Image (tube, rainbow, N blue to C red; front, side, top):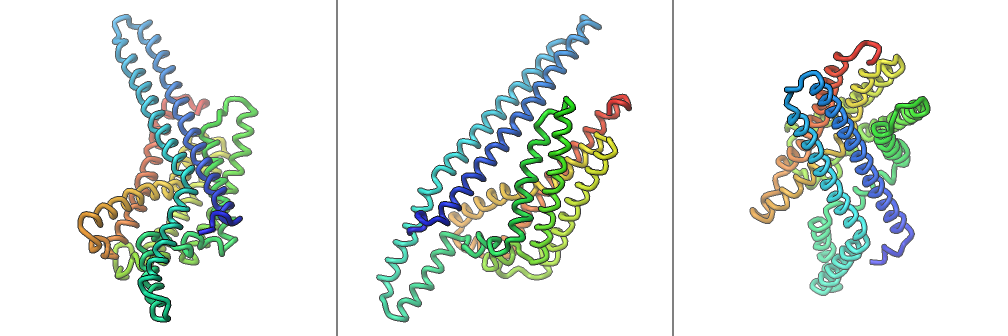
Length: 352
């Protein structure tokens, strides 16, 4: 109950605030980038409209205006969505201390009620401890041993966690900062080296996690209880999938670096998109897991506790979100690469 007054809790709260501010800055950065690209697209439409009208007075100029209005509406919807998401995150961030105190008060009240019900004898205390374990597992499903498991492995914190944070920050900057002047291009190259170094650190940490088997099946063994070894997402297949994704992360980074050094910018941009997708699917999976968790919660309310007792069903749902996230991210990167290739084919060779 007094955890919020301890130095460790204050450090955790500060880190949580830093993460949320970081994500909000990432959303703002992405919004600025998309808006700039849409405004550039609108300027291109105006140029094409003027050229088309000057060459053919009978051309349908309304078509260009409709496209411009459509782009403006999309920007407005994007701004509303980003503002809504930012407001939700700010509310969540500012209420962390209140929710923490509420959860601690709930646990304390449950402990007092359980002790009064079972008495202070040895058997009574044992029964109370067992009942409180069930209460915590039901109402607070992520135990400290799981949420803080990486705190016992500093090498992973300094590689995967630190590397991934720098990787994501430099990725946002690389996609949003202009590259028109020589100084800006030099800054792009410096950030690119930091980006690649961060990717190496993150890959090293991921390799450690895979080698140690520190994944959800072991963390939540009771949640995934009863999953047969020959299931669709068996232990061996999960290990193989994680290894292949880690290899693809490293391979796409190497390809992007190779094309950057040889000044083949179109290929470099395509492989950077693939590399970004090979890392960002993890974040998208978290959103899908949130949808899946909501589905489980609603199903439990409607059909009772038996709805989530099937470990195989929950296992397939959990890892299925990962597969869906990989398909969405990798597929989007491939579509982007195809669009880059189609655009480059229309340019003269000296402009690619």
